[in-house]
Length: 453
Image (cartoon, rainbow, N blue to C red):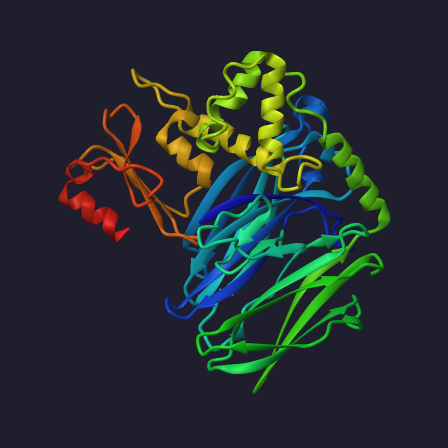
């Protein structure tokens, strides 16, 4: 399961309450007979309160997601902590989005999301039900977003902040997008499974709340192979009045496959509020830091800095260190240097969570971000699957992390000292190093355990 925080500001559609709005998009994988599920949860910031009563401190909450089958059997449970930028707390309709990706077999399922406010303990819930496909469905669900891009190369598989990657395209999305008069681009992604090779005519049109057509795009022809294919597009909806809408995409061949997705166009007032948030967010986060504070922000960057950047920082003055950190993150800004750097925020949020979850004690004590588990967590986030063998009687305790979304990577961490200090002993990631004797450390049963996971 991939867990990626998608931060957004949106105005809820008319009639939505202040609960958690949970939506899913599903895609069928014929080879395995499984359904891939993208689940999105919109968390209205009315559900959280400022830490310490001051908006400048921001807010925080614990997010938990649980998936159960029709018998009530729990199949998945994950939780993590998110922080909220203080400047967002006063914005009308502001929200933050959480994203979960997982697979299910054919059947009926329920997904429940829970937010617990760190300041007050207030709990807010949201729930949805969905089905795992059995095949013969013709097309996936329709995924809407506000941007999409193709990978630059075969090795370009890492989504930027706010994106998800489905193996073909990166899509900027939070499930049910909100456009504004200054951000009018709507994108869509749809997988097609007609069952045989054919040429399909694909037509996209925007419908208002009453179902009347507002805008229709020019139809396009899409050639689809026997194993299926994709169609996607970008619509510029400048001038669309504020309100709730649906995008309908129809793929017509021997039969017609129709899929819809909801989105909202916000008014000019929301655009102005967003601009004010951007103005606040551009405040230099390094300006008030002491040298020790700057050094603490620099140290975890060892995992992502390039060879040219390594070694530049230590000899600088305090002001030079501030400029170095500003330049380092400006070069990596998804917004091209404008507004808050979401990638920087995500990176340091992972550093903080790694410090909380993976701190190791004893003679080999280390801050969480310095540990092997902390490093992998910072770089890739929560593993999609995790195998825990802490109570294993035949070898030292170990755990296996597996990432399956858009790549197939395993990391085996073993407690070599039995003091809770986990070391990376094996991985198939060519960027990391395995221990030459990792098989001896695991033993025959452990090696088979890892191979079968």
